[in-house]
Length: 273
Image 1 (cartoon, rainbow, N blue to C red):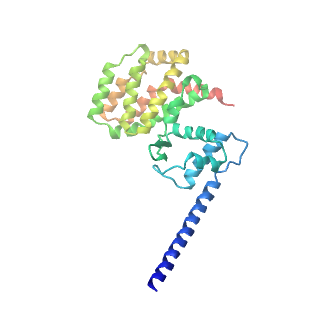
Image 2: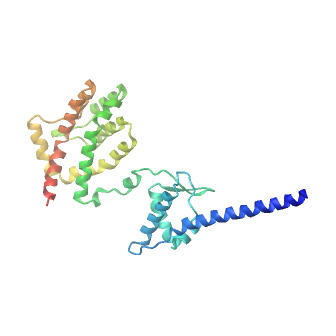
């Protein structure tokens, strides 16, 4: 009798396990069915990329979670594996997925600006985009003043002092590209914000390109400021940092960017309807 009951119980457990697996399988199929491409007005690769991102979000996937295999994804999407791989390569470039030995593809936390840093070439950007990026750089650097003072210490002051002493300056307060980059990169570093620090690496080539391309505009402004004694140098900015004068530093930084501000204002006026 006991053996009979045991057999019935075992059969029942197997039955319910089969039902459980079936429901799980059906549920996964439903999720994968939602991946099917339907909008034919957009390129297949763009659609696949969008569907994959939607899949990650709807399943609340976290960094380290496994991404379904290529074969499963291609079948669910109804596309060839070559199309799928191109979409996946975009996500890899953004740092969203990676392939691991014996684990397949897994989701990872993307580096926010990595993709932008790889493709941002000033030579292929239109003037409006260049101006917008330059304006963003000016606004950001003015906006991090308080953060710089909050994190400033003797070590940073010594490093800034060393950078200023070694800087090479031409006439009209024009620094060599290396001197310019070292000083402003250090200011970004002092904030302790890695995104801000990485942005400096991205925006520097843009700033350098704009100054070179529109040199005929910047030169007269720098000469005018020099003649009126309105030039604010890196050494001047350092003095405000040393005495802890936040307000003075903020105003001086705004004056330091006068050439950029005038340039941006002029071109903004031109672009108005």
